[in-house]
Length: 161
Image 1 (cartoon, rainbow, N blue to C red):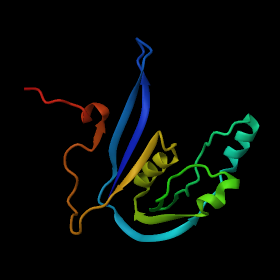
Image 2: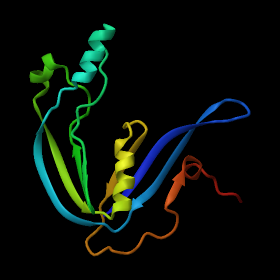
Image 3: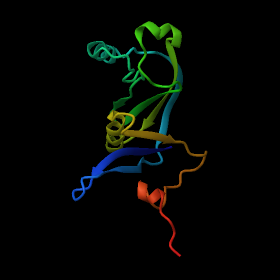
């Protein structure tokens, strides 16, 4: 199993002051052992901070998230992802949307430095940074060859003749 990190930050050109995207993707961890996998139902957590902010501002726009977090331990990290869409749930509408979400939890044997990389990206807002777990086929333990860090320019390069 491999872990791919993706960040979408922005750079400001010092000469023009123009803002341009700085999209970077890279392999954070490679050939990681899976220690445990489980599937469960997770109770929806109502985003009370967003509700308080919305009440103070007097608006009705939804903000924040209601997804379960990830925990990290020494040498291992547990990742929880939800199958349902993530968004703040209004306390009054909780019954309409259901009170549980499906979740899959994967415990990986990560060294501390790789667990720190994953935790840093996990701590970012979803629109700024995300990571993806890349499963491998059974028996595929070959190291990743070639580039392991990509930018937006790498995605849209054209071959010169």
